[in-house]
Amino acid sequence: MTFTLPDNSVIGLIAVACYICSTWLLCRPPVRTAATGDDDSVSSRRPLIWVWCMAVSAAALHALMLLSSTITPAGLNLSFFNSLSVTAWLAVVLTLLLNTGRPVINLGLFLFPMAATTLLLSLFFTHRSDSNFDTGVQWHILISVVAYALLTIATGQALLVSLLDKRLRSRRTGGIVTALPPLKVMEAVLFQLLLASFICLSLALMTGFFFLEDMFAQRMVHKTTLSVVAWCLIAVLLVGHLRWGWRGQKAAGITLGAFVSLLLGYFGSKFVIELLLS
Image (cartoon, rainbow, N blue to C red; front, side, top):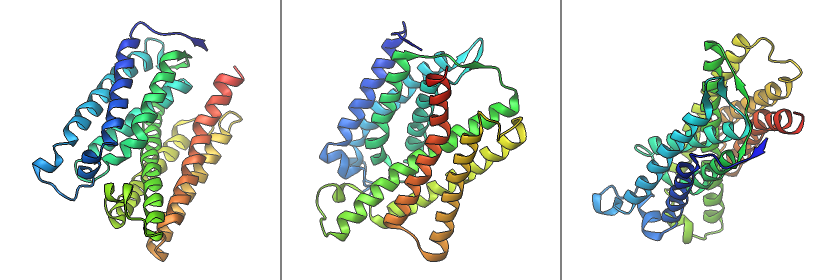
């Protein structure tokens, strides 16, 4: 691993600036109020226009950086920092797409700084891990990244649900409470995201068992085990929600546990293998 600033770093730095501007704009009171989705009139949603412009610009520039750093003549460069950056970028893109039908733009307060940080890390710390994968393995990787991104979004939503639930229980209805949609809407979006994450993670595990030579080899056993743990946690939460009405703090805690398990399973093992042992 070397510490460098690539020639095309200007594009990446502009993307980082756009992410920071998007976050700052979301913190502004007019934008926070418009982001709740309670009023769909053009005038009330006008404050979100600059957020959208900045966020879409950041995601587009981020994509250009990823194309040049990830797709190489030697194969896919899915190094630790590149993988972090790809996952964060996809989480931002999915959030922007989801917001067309659901009020989830407030997740940008969590996702935009994360995307900016991962992009900066991939800019300054270059580490190559080129691999030529066959088509089946490429599909497994793609589905896995989508699953990670969806669970990242669900975790951000779970944190907001937890915060909103605590504020409402303590009868503190000012501040951020006024800037978020109703708790019922927030929880509905959370479980929709969890269901999508569960489906993608199921497909990722199935394609892994089918296309990878040995999912329980020494270099893969931690990743596989922790991914299965995350899958089980999401499954238990979805069943508990349908059967016993689990929600609020319990749902947020289990979601966070699944996220940490998946984070350690993929990025934790990748960090140890690529950066500590190599």
